[in-house]
Every structure is written in structure tokens, then in C-alpha cells.
Image (cartoon, rainbow, N blue to C red; front, side):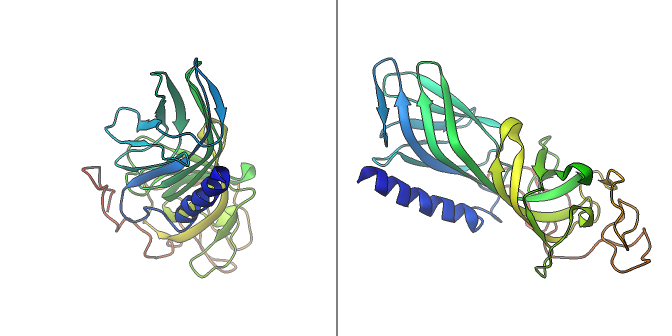
Length: 265
């Protein structure tokens, strides 16, 4: 019964991530469930209560409830350590990846206090990003947080399995993305912090994005597309210097709640 309750509750957590979580607030959220614990004293499968979950080098913390669920929210960004402190005093660490203002959901976290390591079966993430560069030959886009594009963190996003759509719902190819596009990304965090995107929704253009210029690596060669770096161009024979599409995605959401950096205008 406890396991069934935990699964149902985590479904609600993942649902919150799917509809944007903290999107638009600048607050980063991390939620999930602990499913098993190993320590010098015991090994137990199932939900575990009373584990203190903390974001490393921040005051943000939460204790797991009777179903093993935890929830954190505040001013942080990953990659960053998430610490799981067991009642016996041992601590395990898990590196999580979530851009500032995004929502992270961790499914079935295993905590090993004996070796100090924790792992999650799935890390699901949703965030508002800006495209910095694309390498379409590899179906790869490098993105930054739309909230704090200059915080030094970049996020490689794999597009091969993703559905990419424009604001009207039309399906796009990687070649249609350009530097500065404001996007909503949903996917799973893989090894080395790469995000395997499930969906990428283009919300608008921010006039070049961080650092300006940029664009594809030169692999864009579809009919009617101009040279990279000049925004999206539509229609056969359109000029490579066409302007980027306008939209309400931009950087109008302001800065980070709790004293974070504000994005460029």
C-alpha cells in the first residue's frame, strides 16, 4: 500500500513538472522520492522517512515524508550536489542538473550512506532556455537558462528524439533553430548532464541571445534557409540576413527570485 501511495504521489509531482513547475517565477524546484536506503546499519527497500535532503552550499532542505517524498524550492541552479543525510549520520551525494528557474523531478532515488553515493532511476527536467548554438549534424543544441543566461552554466540538449514546434504548433527541424530563440524544454537528464529532449517549444526570439550572433555550425542547408546566425528565414529564396521571429518568450520575465541575476534585456 505504501509503495502504491508513493507512486501516485510522485505522479502528481511529475505532473507539476510537465505543466511548467516554477516556470515564470525564477524559483528552481526539485522534487522526488527516495525508494531505498543502504547504510552501515541496515538495507531497506521501499519508501523511507526522515532523510534530510539539502541542496549543497545552500540553506534549502526538506525531510522525506512517510512515502519517501521530498520537495525543495529556491534560488539555485545545477549541476549541483544534492545531499541525503541519513538518521545514522551518514550522507550520500547526487549531482543533479537543472537550469535556474527550472523544475526537476527525481524518480526512485537510491541512497547508499555506506559509500556516500545516491542515484536516481530518472531525472526529468523542464526549463525555459535560450538557444546559444546548434550542431544539427549531431542533433545537438547548447542552451542556457533564460533566467540567468550569463551564470556560466550551459546545457547540451539532444534533439534526435524530440518534437520541436513553433508557437503555432508547426513541427520544426533542428535547422530552424537559431541563436537567441526562446524555448521551453522538457526531457530527461542523461550522463554528464546532457538533456535528452522529449519536446522543445519555440516561444520567440530574443534578438541574438547571449553573446549575439552565433547560430548553427554551418550544417543548415534546407531549402529557403539563409545563412546561420541571422534568425529564422521563411520561404524560398529568402535572404540570409532575415530578422528573427518575434514572440513573447524573450527575456521579459525578469530576474531570479531571491536576489539572482536578471537576464539581459
